[in-house]
Image 1 (cartoon, one colour):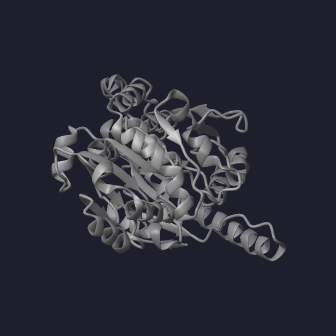
Image 2 (cartoon, one colour):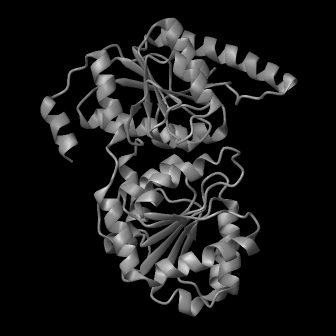
Image 3 (cartoon, one colour):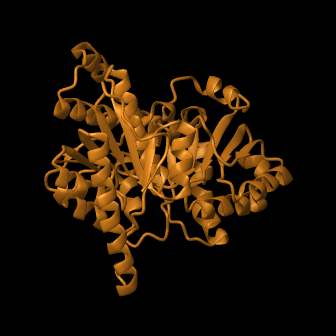
Amino acid sequence: MAPWSGEAPLADKPTILFVGGGSGGHIYPNVAVLERLAEFGVSIEPRFVVSDRDIDHDILSKLELRGTAIGAKPLALRPRQFIEFYKAFRHAEQDVFDLIRSTGAKAMLATGGFVSGPAVKAAARASIPTGMVNLDAVPGKSNRFTARYATDLFSAYETNQLKRAQHVGVPLRADCLGHVSPEQARLSIGLDPALDTLLIFGGSQGGGTINQAMVELVSRATVRDLFDGWQVLHLTGQTDVDSVREAYAARGVPGRAEPFCAQMGRAWASATVAVCRAGAGTVAEAWANAVPCLFMPYPYHKDEHQRLNAAPVVNRGGGMLLKDRIDPHHNVGELMGPLRDLMKNTLRREQMRKVLEQSRPADGAATLAEWLIGVLGLAVSPTKLIRRQAD
């Protein structure tokens, strides 16, 4: 177990463990709940329990949050790998149990995935209230296993596989929500405020095929026609940023390519249309910001759960679902027609945006914050809860 930012909790604040790691998609929902608790005026001592991957440490360090890394590993079924998984699980479970004892933690909120399994089992041993949140449309093996040890279950999607789960919205951080006009958002991140904006979100883990498809697309498309009155904000991740910038510059495509954006709410607010994956968090952000999307789910998931993540938006008419064919040449054939249609058809875009605005999900972060307040009997002004619900 690898702690940082100290061990001792503040004596006058209850410690809550926020569990989830391996990617930002499992950490940021917990950050959103912590934000809502602060909005409600609740004072706690948060401790994040994450994986030992560098990305987890980097995220918490940038947010200046206290964390503890455990050596949990994803489930592996081959005999030798399963033995390693099992040993890591048992060590991680004991580490979290010891952490609960040393910090006097009063409750745990876990966002699923391989980090949550041993942590929630340790919380069951310690007999503290534990909420487990399933974030994807299809609960994975880890979540189905972990659910049996949690005192309360929540799911961002309605599912028959977690019988006790309360349906809640995906918890979203405040900085993922755009509360300014498109013109203000574009100006604040260095874009032309007067141009419609195509947001390409290829910076998530496994987003490389989207980046490569756009490089191929601009090399073949009649760029002057396609991007007349438009600009691009392309979030590439670190690996592909140079090749994407070079491709856009060579064809005179206006806009910016950046490895990431620290103000995702401004990025979404600037967007007229987006092309992106269909991770639960990405779908929720697009929906909350009412941005019509072309979803290209990650192509290597056997259960294709990203396609199901996008289904509530697509079925309402707020987005379109494409197939990532991996090969850039084939992906251009998949992407070009729908993309051109959305960029050129103002009426259709407005209809899609209106559908999204009228069907936004409830604030999952607020619901989970209220659960924590309830199980711990924490003091909070009822007017703050009422005000948040009204918002």
